Length: 136
Image 1 (spheres, rainbow, N blue to C red):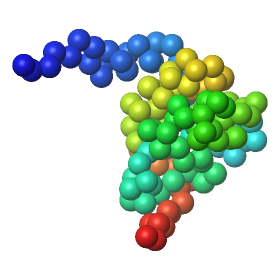
Image 2: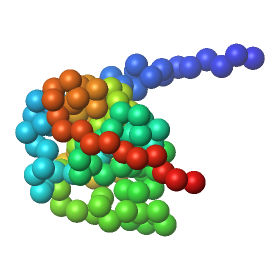
Image 3: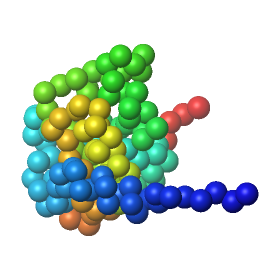
Image 4: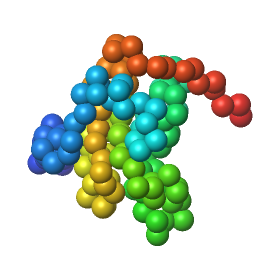
């Protein structure tokens, strides 16, 4: 029997965007380098190697987000226990919208996501550094 999806990704994105703050890329560029803002890169490691990364951004693969945020998790990362603003981004803004909503639902605050993601960041002239492939 085929599956019937009752709430597709567009619905999930609409719901997430309705409850989170979206930061225009021009504002994100001006926030870069501030001590009170943590840029969180949700992209896959292959995306970082192919496209580069925002200098100073914390790389948190999307599949680890909930585990890295929760202090009760054995995978918790202290970067998510700071009194700072967390600005999530991915390639285009879809994963980051869902992630910011999830982080906010978990109690992390304040959170936001960058409109247009890393693609918009590069197009706006934001700083980018190369990422060397990890050696096996």
